[in-house]
Image (cartoon, rainbow, N blue to C red; front, side, top):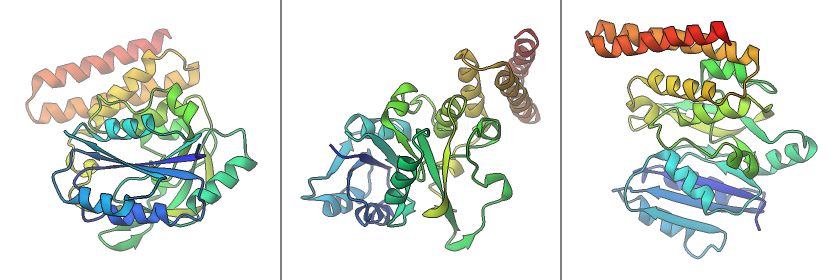
Length: 283
């Protein structure tokens, strides 16, 4: 049984998937399996993947007949995996060759942590850039800052399978912000480790990125926040933080719909904000 299962979901990424897969195959830590899940692609990526993985007993290639979304693809990969630890790599990102080894060494030395990520190099439109101060990685209790934005990069994280299963994986009903949703649930209960070294490259700026193509991401963050409140496991401080964030995001979305003269959705999000305020006052 491998110690680490690496999951790469991909959809119509024939132009970049080779780079991602080769960065896994080049790892100097060898106790892993690689599972690539093609989420119903219509391009030539399948041939590229099959050519790279063919004959490797530590690799699986799963082809889905239809596109289900990245959450379904990641969850499918985990269901077919066997490792104690789960690591994800987006098909447009890349690992440095020491990534898995250094993460496992760190986790072995810090057994209190069930999840850890690394620093990362950002490349936007072919140029190295520094992430903004709001995206600087943090360690320990990162729940409060995670409410504001996604503070864990899927391609840098590694977590225990039991932790992934505890929260039932990624929410397949969310077309976006599925990572924001899962990381919030985890950080509400557990600290996050940080290996203070850039061990991956995060690419951005291309048109097919999901985060660039889905409008109104705050709508999905609001759903994640509502689910978190329904979970009924937050202490008073964290519940207050969630309510405040929910009210703020609902107000922003409501005003956006008002400017577009969509009164029905304006009223819907205004009411959600009002209900959240009442919830905060009585809990």
